[in-house]
Image 1 (cartoon, protein in one colour):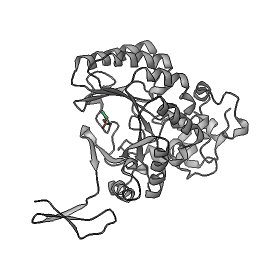
Image 2 (tube, helix red, strand yellow; image 1 turned 120 degrees about the vertical axis):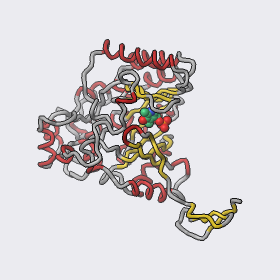
Image 3 (cartoon, rainbow, N blue to C red; image 1 turned 180 degrees about the horizontal axis):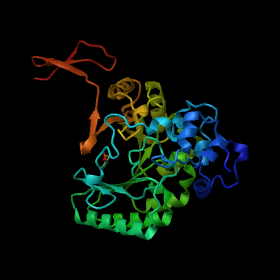
Image 4 (cartoon, protein in one colour; image 1 turned 135 degrees about the vertical axis):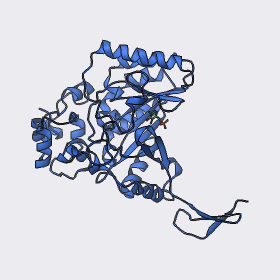
Length: 366
Ligand SMILES: *Cc1c(COP(=O)(O)O)cnc(C)c1O
């Protein structure tokens, strides 16, 4: 049984396959490692649970077993709140299913596609946008046939410039299976680059092996979008993973979901963005939490995200400031939300409020 204290760690803890095999998945596993609240225990034992629960032993070790308010804990251990469907929530908030020309491929923006490689993840974030899909157990031959259909679609659509491989988490596959897909995509002449969307570098950094990086390098340009939500995820282990990826020439970007009671303060986001820069990860998106069913307890007001971006400006290099994004329900797509600095116009002059909130500036714009 995995324990989240170092002295109980098995000798294979550095092996990602050990991490996968020893994930905490049942109420019993969690009871062993955490002082559970009633709400957590009820949610874990409910057989109607909408989607699976799982944490790697490594990630469990980043969570305070006694503190029910631990930020990472809230995102991983279910609570009864997730059974409550709130207003404006959907099973498929981004209408991805209707924008899929072939199963597992979302073609919403003309120039790029989202390739859902798998429905597997090492951990299941409780606010997951694709909770309707994840956790299945498809047979690999079937999966490969599905990939083949997507590859053919991309080959036939020369307007597509890039492929974002996501899921589920693509890095749950072996190097060989990943390479099967990457090598085929890299052969498509009209693609400019390939992106991998993953949370693995922070939830299972052991997966980022030298061998994996050597393989990825062969298919450049390969970018990586890393799902990171909190400074507690930046450890010696995840830093070593970022370093290996960056040294392999992979441009790294971050995607952070803004979550109530987890990371919804300017100080928390500022600290995270600084840590990311230090690790050669360029902050990319700060995302409003998608209105997936049962996620109301995670959602902040849209105004909060705008306020955080405003607070970052002037305290952090532009390299560290992500775009705040609202992905509009029903397939509206990603909309960047920015603070208003132009407050009006007086004849040929724009009235401007600066990053400190000081009014009275103007700019001739005739
Ligand atoms: C987010 C997303 C992408 C990638 O968008 P970028 O702005 O290029 O990061 C592509 N397709 C779909 C359907 C998406 O939701």
